[in-house]
Image 1 (spheres, one colour):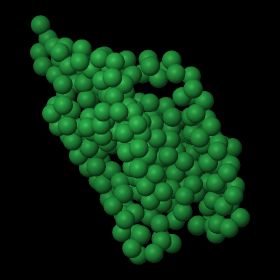
Image 2 (tube, helix red, strand yellow; image 1 turned 30 degrees about the horizontal axis):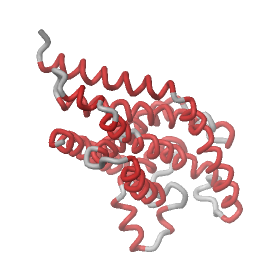
Image 3 (tube, rainbow, N blue to C red; image 1 turned 180 degrees about the vertical axis):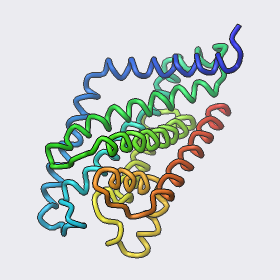
Length: 253
């Protein structure tokens, strides 16, 4: 007989494995992983490049590259929560709810699955770095992976928390887009934070993705807007709060 820890780890692994298998079977997801960064880098990057004043000698395409990676993480991690609605719709969620595993392990497995999918999407975006002249050192690469993992965990937890209280695809799509777009555009991903008016800086400073983008930009380009300690504390604290909220809401369901 497995104890609580054994059941927790086993349940989390099975849920994670199922979501990863589903991702690997969805070829269109990989096509979208390539299309989204290409579209943003070419259309937005090339379009605004002539009017962008170099920020510390950094080209605009290089400046927004960490933000485009963050965008891939945001979309993938948040939309991973839709698997909760999918499983509820087709009855699979009822089956795992009566399984002899802790409900916390179900949420943990879903968060791990969402974070892994986001990491894959972000990793695909990183492949475009040499094409726009971004040179990532070995130390910077591993630092970048750690930062991406923290961001993916936090946003995947948020997606699961939202999906735990939403019962339709349409509702989740509307709410998630309402959350995703402000998270991305109010994070300094596509423009320098220091150029914003004071009232908008306040809003940007409350956005957890702002600190994730700042960490990634620092790891890639060596340009920081905030201190590293503040960045890590804010995004990590947000991730822990979202994970606890996801567990609480799912257990209530």
